[in-house]
Image (cartoon, helix red, strand yellow):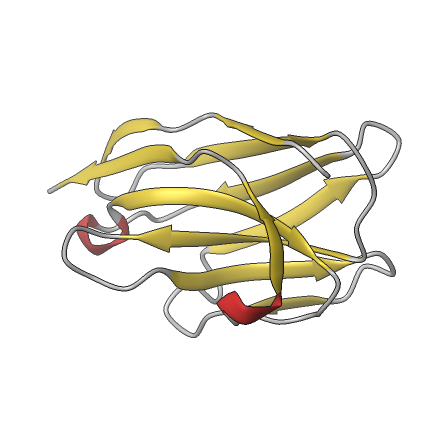
Amino acid sequence: QVQLVESGGGSVQSGGSLKLSCAASGYTYSRGWFRQAPGKEREGVAAIVSDGRTRYADSVKGRFSISQDNAKNTLYLQMNSLKPEDTAIYYCAAGWQFGLDRSGVAYWGQGTQVTVSS
């Protein structure tokens, strides 16, 4: 069992930036970020695997950047040029498949709220 603990959420104005962190208690091949807005399905935002390959949802390409510090077992999501439609609960995820599909996730964090005001 891998525990995931997110931090770094908060409120920001449109155009601002936030950085999310996720501390993991163990190794998995793939890690990523998902988000869920009120009344919507949980969707994949960004994913990264152990060799550094990344994948992004079209809606965040060029604005968000996923990275990891293997020595600290910590995952990051740098979010720039935030928009009101980025408002959601952001979840850290980990598993053994590379991608943005929920079916590949084995472990979930508890979520952290990101609110972007216009």
